Structures are given as structure tokens and as C-alpha cells.
Length: 136
Image (cartoon, rainbow, N blue to C red):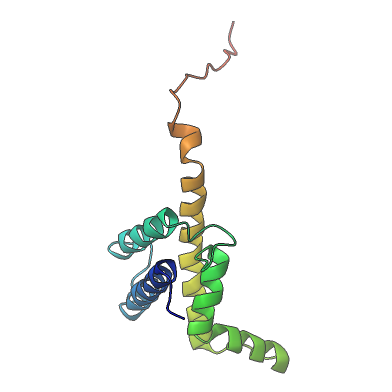
């Protein structure tokens, strides 16, 4: 069965996210700095506009879906399960990838939160809030 356009887009976005994050890691540059932050944000905007960030979308590029997908790609799921079963620590390489994933997901979740509340603060005219005076 051929992939739908939405599935193709999701796969492309996931591949581009993966490549951008791993490039930042290879360059030992924080994801929060340019050019990585802008590149990741552009991918977020596309994913959101395509409806791929909503929980339950198929495929799902929500933080949970991305954690699952990237965790599988990077071997983190297997490493975490193995570590838990054998009651030992994860390798430094896997811990480094886990921190990288958390850093990325924190930004993704912050953007998702801000994006979801945009209309609440921008679609109506601003009204000044009066602060009561304490001196009379």
C-alpha cells in the first residue's frame, strides 16, 4: 500500500528533524542556538500546519510521538529496556543521546504550548489592566 501524502510528509519531517539534531550533536552545538533553533522551529511550523502535532494524529509528531520515533531510531528504547532488565546504567553514548532528545523535546513542547495559546493573546484588542494603587 503506497504511503499517503501525510505519511510521506511526516516521514520527511522526521528525517529532517533527526538529521538536524544529529548534526548539532556532531558539531557539539546546542540546539537552542542558531542555526539549529530556526531550522527546528521551521519544521515545527510545518508539522503544526499539517496537523501532525495533535495527539492521536496519524502519524503523530507530538512530543510523545517524536520521543518514541527518535528513541527507536537512536537505540534508546532498547538501551533503556536493557538497562532496566539488567539493573545497570545506560552507556555514556546513550545517556548523551537521551539528553539531546530531552533538549529537543523541551523546545518542541514550549513551541507547542505557545502556539496553542497564540489566539488567546493576539486575536482581541489589548485592554490595559489597571493596577490598584497602594498609596492613598
